[in-house]
Image (cartoon, rainbow, N blue to C red; front, side, top):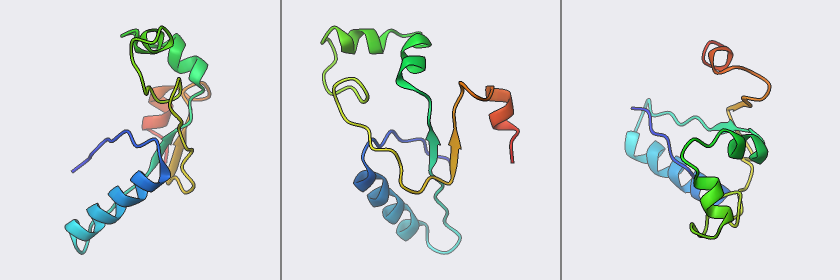
Length: 93
C-alpha cells in the first residue's frame, strides 16, 4: 500500500512511521520522500489557487504560508522539481 500524507511536523511523521511499522508487522516499510521544492515554485505552479487564497487569509493554517513546515531530518529520498523533471524523478534510482 502506498500512502501519501502531508505531515508538516517531524513529530507527526515519526508517530505515523511508528504506527505503520507496528501495525504492518514483519515486512512493513515506510519511506519518507521530501519534496524540497521552494515555496515560490509551489505558488507559481498552484493550479487550484490555494496559495493565493492562503495569502489573502481565506485559508488559515496553510503550511508554508502561515503555518510552519519542518524539513524532514531523515528523508529516504529528496526531490526538487526545479532541478529535475517529474520524468527524471520517477525514473531515478
